[in-house]
Length: 212
Ligand SMILES: CC(C)(COP(=O)(O)OP(=O)(O)OC[C@H]1O[C@@H](n2cnc3c(N)ncnc32)[C@H](O)[C@@H]1OP(=O)(O)O)[C@@H](O)C(=O)NCCC(=O)NCCS
Image (tube, rainbow, N blue to C red; front, side, top):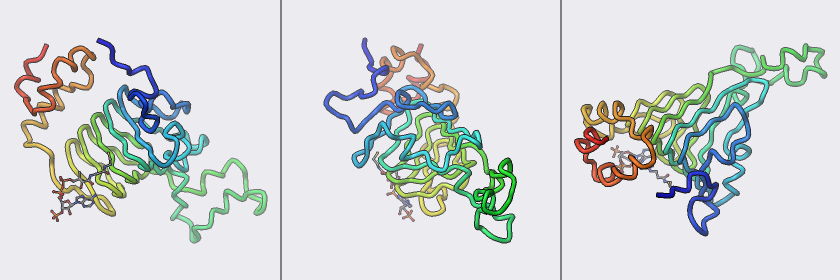
């Protein structure tokens, strides 16, 4: 069986949909196999420039995205340099203009608050134009609704939406979620996933549990 995971464009004739990992050049960004990005406005291959914002190398912030995620057009990841520091009496970023104000160049990162990396699990669906803020972890199987602004962690298999994003509901009963988190089908071989696509699609958790 041939699965075109090594191609940027997995769908014949479709240049708007990519397997994201193939366009990542920044060592602070990692994306798992089969995670897809679709963009019908801009070139999806420009994901690092258009969708990973305020991600300055000096901060060493990490963006980690798991396998089999679906990232919709215009979803954005806003990193720490977007957060003008609130510990100052002014939000004006004086440290950025260190030459003008006679400040130390080495203190330039004091211009912003550091909230941490962004971690996206596996099989996460991020809706159209959703915004994920620095420091947020989104669990396996979660769904982020269109135009959500995600300011806090989202547990696995939870649908979150709104501004700021709040949990809307859990996708499955607790026992199914536990089983899925234990099975971690996304770490299976391509052949094993292919053999079990029917069970995944139809919600047959018992078949997944018994799969070899
Ligand atoms: C989040 C989403 C998956 C929820 O789907 P759903 O489970 O069918 O949800 P429902 O339509 O039953 O709505 C459930 C509740 O969530 C609210 N809701 C749904 N989508 C929401 C969103 N994006 N933001 C905020 N609230 C939302 C509904 O108003 C409803 O609220 P209520 O319970 O107070 O009445 C869906 O609304 C969504 O945003 N999908 C993303 C679509 C997209 O961006 N696709 C891009 C192409 S891949």
